[in-house]
Length: 357
Ligand code: SF4
Image (cartoon, rainbow, N blue to C red; front, side):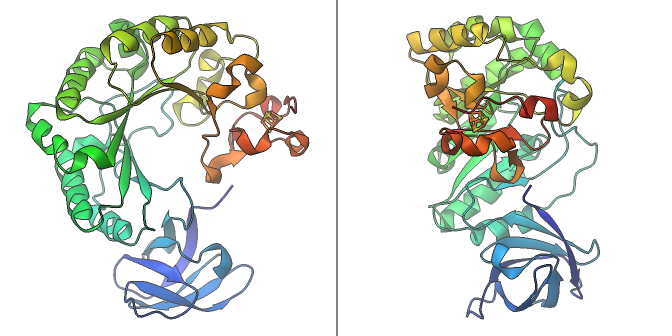
């Protein structure tokens, strides 16, 4: 697994963001490397000297947030990675049965650091925004992105949201500069309100979500609909496909996603996880229904050898590099380059049962 948090030592008085460069540059926002060993590198920048418990080669070009008092550094934006995301809050007003990032009550506002980091992002970067629920802090979030796009119109943002906080007051703002540069990743788990509300742990969530979709439609916002496949909703997926076709034809993509064995899902794994090698038929039916109605649908987080051959074209090699793993037997697989593989925390006994293609 690629480490996203590193041990760090710095005498700076406060946390700071900097981009790591291999040599001295004229940009005061960059720090340059003075020395490096296989386990540690020494850097120099506007905030003085600091060390990171990682070699220079693996870090050059990264944008890091160094927190001297916590003696750690976060790799906010890794150079060359398409999987960078910023966790803006751990608060959430839903309690999904399979939540991979169980919510916390407190919020630490780090928008200032995130904005600095985004200004240092590589040209044309698409930066993920995650939580918790980012739109609980809608004002600061949108304001940050508006300021960034004023100076960096090349940047794009993919924001994961539970879709509970869009209203008429947001519409004009979302229809403006933000419209083209943000894709909202919003979950919908069933076409049936009680089932959706059960999965997200919030009565009335489905109704509020549908209202939000109407506001987003008026704004012309770009939407990726996301559905984690669970025991609870597996047999409801075909109905959801028809619901999406008839009610949400404006979405850019419907992503059917495999479950992550982390957070709440870890202790509920046996009740929630679907082994698609044995039970792909409901998913295949949903894919067929979606395609029949012209819904752009994709399969995320599922290894190719778990998918029947006729459905493999729907699969996306979606798992982020830092949390992706493969079985030893995958080395000999002809499909490895296009395969999602597994999450780092996927149960070993399932990872070992691969069938190289
Ligand atoms: S054998 Fe490995 S690389 Fe090949 S399809 Fe299965 S999981 Fe993917």
